[in-house]
Length: 255
Image 1 (cartoon, rainbow, N blue to C red):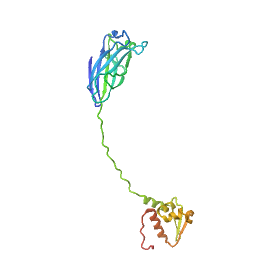
Image 2 (image 1 turned 30 degrees about the vertical axis):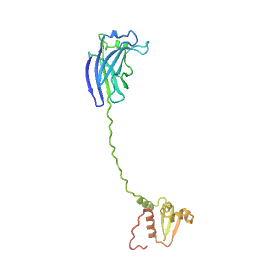
Image 3 (image 1 turned 60 degrees about the vertical axis):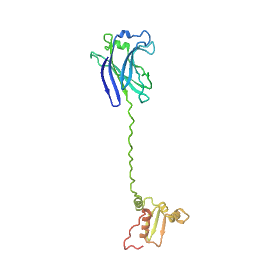
Image 4 (image 1 turned 90 degrees about the vertical axis):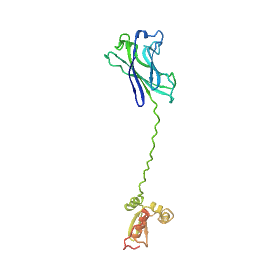
């Protein structure tokens, strides 16, 4: 058994080892799945066992496999479970053949003795026909990765207060009055016409509410004549109704 490397990551602990299985002909089971080879590992403070079955088959009539499984042998420290992954491939110690494709089996371990599902690496007949079997021996490169339980991290949430934009409602209603868009009533004052909106006038004045939505004759009228008022004064009145602002009068303007 040759220890190749051990690498500790920020969120995982990993150990890679090369295991050489000698005496291949003797690994053929005299009874189903009886031949097992074990290797003990220490990773991230836990004890593990890789169990290799060179003659594994679920059903007796099927071709047997070289299969592996990972077993958890320790007690838990703080978490309620441990997560680990078993990876394996065939390698050629001579360096003639490229390593085989890596096969993986993930496991979630809740108690001592828990095991992963079987990792079926290669059928015996395929191994025997390959170049990986030399002098009645074959070599595996196994990797066990244990995912560490990272402490929960909390990040303070910084409250971002977005200031409300300044109100420009008066400006928007003033522009609506000037554009006369959607106007539904026209006031005639001293020969001048002023387009307006009944709903806005009614919302701003009980008198207009009664005039346009009550029992008065102007309810259905689209034109209202205003007498005894100067056009400039009425224009200022409309401006105040729409914008809540009193316009400044020229000195020569009369009230």
